[in-house]
Amino acid sequence: MFDAQEIGTTFISQARSHLKDDFMPKIRSCFDVIDESDVWWRRHETSNSIGNLSLHLAGNVRQWIVSGVGGQPDVRQRQKEFAQREALPKESLWKGLNQAVEDSDQVLANFPIERLMGKKVIQGFDQTALQAIFHVVEHFSFHTGQIIYITKFRKGMDLKFYNL
Image (cartoon, rainbow, N blue to C red; front, side, top):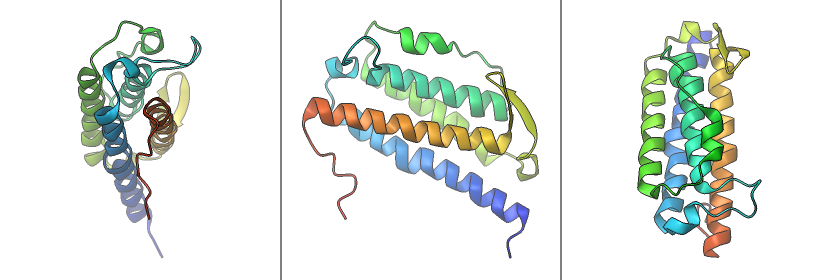
């Protein structure tokens, strides 16, 4: 039988692992092979580029975990993440995303398990800390898949993440 403390600790550990050890290395691999010009490529105006998705992921992680769960001020300007059209260097995007994930990892590493069911209002939604963390992991997964797809599409290559 598992107790609530063990379940909470396992949940946070797994969330941290997904973000840092699964999704971020895949995004890094994409950044390593994609050209600067392809970072801002979009199929059409209503699509997002890898650049926009990177800004969006950093903003989302900061708003939901660093601010919402961790209590830091919320300074996110969500619309700017999607409106950005001026090409920023891919290494600058990577550094911003990586720092956001590192900051969120610190929040999660120090988060008291007994507060997982505590309520927070994040982006206008009434959420528990557990729901907020779960949201970030699933949201990050979704957009990581989009970054991988765009990279494969633009480079015409298999990134070989799952060669079993």
